[in-house]
Length: 99
Image 1 (spheres, one colour):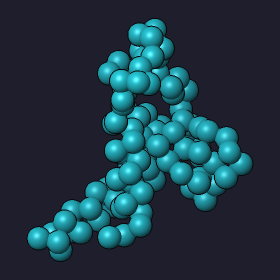
Image 2 (cartoon, rainbow, N blue to C red; image 1 turned 90 degrees about the vertical axis):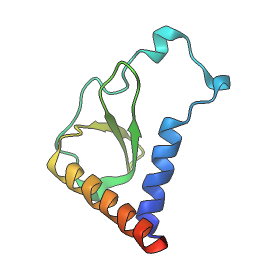
Image 3 (cartoon, rainbow, N blue to C red; image 1 turned 90 degrees about the horizontal axis):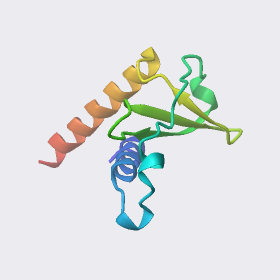
Image 4 (cartoon, rainbow, N blue to C red; image 1 turned 180 degrees about the horizontal axis):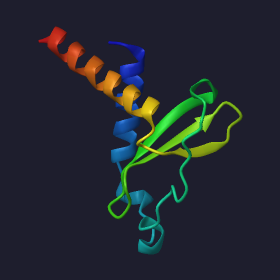
């Protein structure tokens, strides 16, 4: 399995998994992490990407940069859409090979 595919699968699993022990008060849960998004984050400055989906917020993408700063990226950014499309295709291909 490709390492990038594995990393994306891990991020999605972590983003969707929420144990009850870490439950937060409703007022904090309903807040969106990304209030302002950026369209101009250079891909080469990104160390990792997290995907968040909370009930009352749109799909959120948080990039951790090489300087340890975190930035919210607009999910409609062209390069991010292409990245997600490529990753999904790789996952589908690896599943087809395994079957």
